[in-house]
Length: 606
Image 1 (cartoon, rainbow, N blue to C red):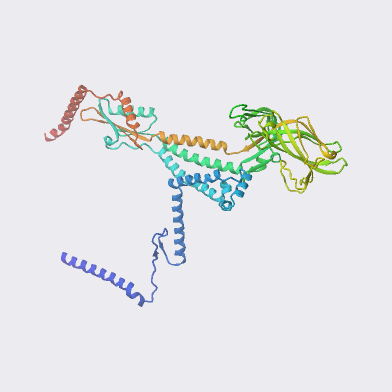
Image 2: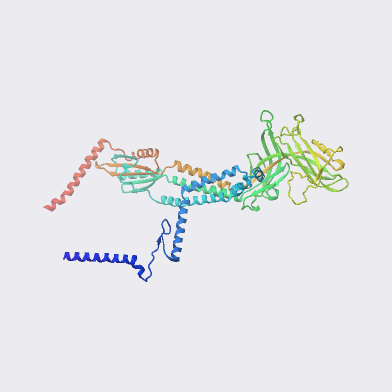
């Protein structure tokens, strides 16, 4: 019967094999002879995220979607990796180098234009690369945004993982604690439960997270290490946001203020102004100030003669339209902080005070004329424009005065340049022009420059150019009764930079958080400690203490030794006599247990 069953089984196997071979022949050679449509199971594309590509439009569409999704996942994994984040951070550092070496249009447009004129070959290339406006260029913004996304992609999964770790319990004690890098073992006469209770209290006092298990206590500490890592990464995002907000909503402007004059924080008050792309005029902080006086001291002797020692602008300022007036002193590195803005002291100079009367004796101009310094000793160029002027016949025309103001003139030097920045011997040297100032053409021009292309210089009777050197109190009389200019006195002026950057406080917070995060990740060690107490063969208790750190550290054995020393008052090591007594008690208990187990068997035999 068994032979018959085996024969049937062999026959079934041969029939199945023949059927498979026939199917293979039909697929190979018989398919061309058949009119039935062949089934196309798809084409496997090697190296593809889409896998097998099915035939037809729907198959191609499904394959394309899977392929696109695979590439997106791959790019996202690469972008959010720590390696790519460090590369982007390095690229961002490199990208700031051109912004420091090449003059930026947003910082100093005149210097950038002069650089273009001096480097005619490189200027077009730099312009195409956006090196004159690095921080607003496309490539800098791309690096900035990619770094921002990469940091967020790194932080989110690590945050969820950290939250999971905080919610989890310390792991149970391993089976062999003596295999740990740091461990300790001793025998004690204390009961196992008492030892574990004492260990649990001790570890909680040391701020460990504790979990009690059968015969052991597990504890873990150092979660703030990962919190420091997360804080550091979050602080980088905060710094990026602060930098972006500071660039988008910032405003910065300069203003020259003469002693006795004031400034109100409105766009029309600025001499020059630049702002971020998202800035609005309504974002200007409401405040103002008046320059009461300016004081400066200079080195009088030695190799550093003429070097400024102290600049101080004494102002009266107020916040808001109805703010209380307060006194303050602004120095070079001590700005005035008010209403969310900072007022920096940038420069200093002199403004000769003059009174000009036209040919009919009417006052055509009266006031200070701010002059721009030309050198370190404050030799200044002075320009005065008088657009409303009438000569002695009543004819209306325009006048212009041009020259230099010299705080300390010393003719023994052979030059008309100032020899010291203080007002030791002030002199005003001017010449005069008459004609068209060009201010009616509608083209803006600087108040510190005089365009003489459509003007004629006044001449002396001998035909030489008309020019006068004036001291305080002197008067210059123009030829042909054209008018008089009186040198009334001298005032000082100061230039201020008003800066409003909304991201400064956020950047400071991010920097402090970054330092704290790095300190936490470097100085906090993640470690685990286990304490096991089990009955020993000698009748006492065997105490095992072990520790494991996430990284190698010499502090772990020291900490474990301190824990062992702190635990031993509640679990004192057994002496030789105590161990012998415990062994005798254990032996007696074992004999008694054996007798108890033997009694039922004797009764059963009876």
